[in-house]
Image (cartoon, rainbow, N blue to C red; front, top):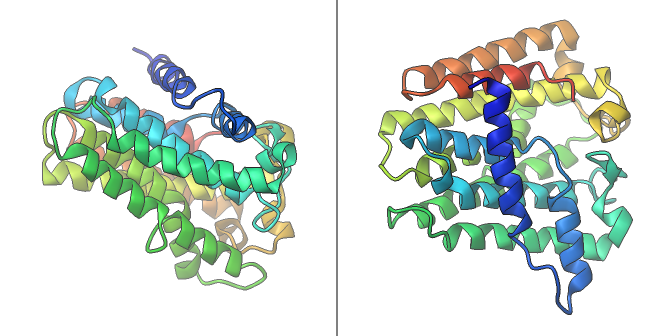
Length: 296
């Protein structure tokens, strides 16, 4: 099957499951509406697709990882809602639509993000798709680490905000994006490994982690490039925000030519990590190449 056919198959599986993840009605109706507004706004669904495809690379099936895939997308959506708030990046557009706080107000947007994070862990903890009794607890630990204040999204976002207007070192910029970007990509990949019916080898766990870390760095560097090269219409969110917020990025440190080289190098390292460890790694390698060349 061609890469895009496989990708669309996984994407449709995720989209269908996400529709059923949240209640539609209740006395807290506007809160539920705000959650669904952001969760079902579209996007490439990179993280849940990676969860499904890592599971498939191990066991030949995507379905055992479907609840985990929904959970990681809920957590990702929570992070985007909060990232867009006036007290953070103060963005008006996300995926080509007004951001959650622009439609529903800041209070409801904050609560929508909080509730989506809670729903993410509920989705993992209550999954009945996996057959190994330890999988759900393992999955919650993986996602919790990616979300938290040690080496996860909250830690990375804090360092990103506190670094505005400062000249950061390469080590500082790399740390921000290992925590803010690569951590959740790593969780997505590891969740797919955790969901598989058979236990993965230590080499496979390590390969998934290495793949995600390298993919995450390539992804962030490409993001920095697109903030300079692309348009608001193409990206579905404002461009030039890094410069206006006086952020040190890989682009400001290296320039476009060197950034292209780094994207290629990290992408190649990601592919090399999984080729030997997984019997069916073709899609994962093609996914890395596709993300490296994306225009939005």
